[in-house]
Image: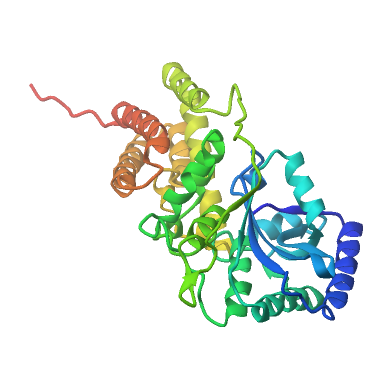
Amino acid sequence: MVNIFLSKKTVFLVFLLSFFNAVCAKSIQLSKEASVSVITCGVGNESYSLFGHTAIRIKDAVNFVDAVYNYGAFDFNTPNFVPKFAKGDLQYFAVVNRYSDFINQYSYENRSVDEQELQIPLTLKQQLFENLNNSLASGGSHYTYKFIDKNCTSMVVDIINKTLGETVITKKTDTELTYRSILYPYFDHHFYEKLGTSIIFGSKVDAMGTKLFLPLELQKSLKLIQYKNQALAPKNQTLLHFEESHPSSWWNNIYSYLIALGLLVIWNKKRVHYVYFATMGLLGLFFLFMGFYSNHLELANNYNVLLFNPTLLILCFFYATKNRAWTYKLSLFNLCLSLIYLVVLINKAHLLIVLPLLLTSAYFLIQLALKNKKPIPIII
């Protein structure tokens, strides 16, 4: 799922070279020595490389072909790039690289690369080769990126299944886990990225993870798939191997998160309540906006707004204007929503990471409710 950032001039050059290569490749008939394989690249420490990458390699020494087809490129200089990415209509496309250039890049990044050769007849190897080149030459390799439904892995699966004439490649492992549970370990050692995705993703990622959308998931499934009564990709060859290294950060970890919340609780001043509830409310508005605005279905139906509730902004207003009745009512209202949120969250992967925020909110809301509760008159 790695992304290749390309400038406008580079995009033009890539298109030109890809088109030229595709046109030239149409006349090539692969020899019996030809092989086709799925390339799986290991995870990296940059945000764009946290999930790894998938590509297809076509190799034929007789015809001097050794190319890697990569569906993870986009133009960083696309007009309105950030709004398009947020809305979910940013266009991705395929590029073809020489294998030597491709492997050198991953060697430079210290990322492992594995290869699984597909055991298919020469006619289907030729057909896949032609499908890839026709896709490049016609612009059919362009697609609108979707985090789960359409990415570098799913595009590779689609074109191979199209070549085989049936849905051969399907997910064989971890189908009993939700997408959220599958994604969660990829953010280890990247705490705030894990927290951010936990609270911005909605109910779609809590569905069972039946689709192949991650490179390592495809790699595991390929080992188990049968085609024409034989293993489709029985062997895994390691082309590059690096031990995983994880970045150390004094702030991007759970300790800074807990310390920050602890300091807020200890400080516990009126201005702290304002800032905390205003921040939570604004985040809730942002989540609601993205749920309606974005075409990324992963952001829709975000039940995390039960905690990050926009009504907290109204609570801040009544608290500031010393309207005790409505401050009390909204405090109780948000406490009820927090309780509902806890029930919803009980079986979710991100329960523990969000729990400190939930407890902090509950503590502040209880304080506000008690301070602004109308006293009961005592008649003597």
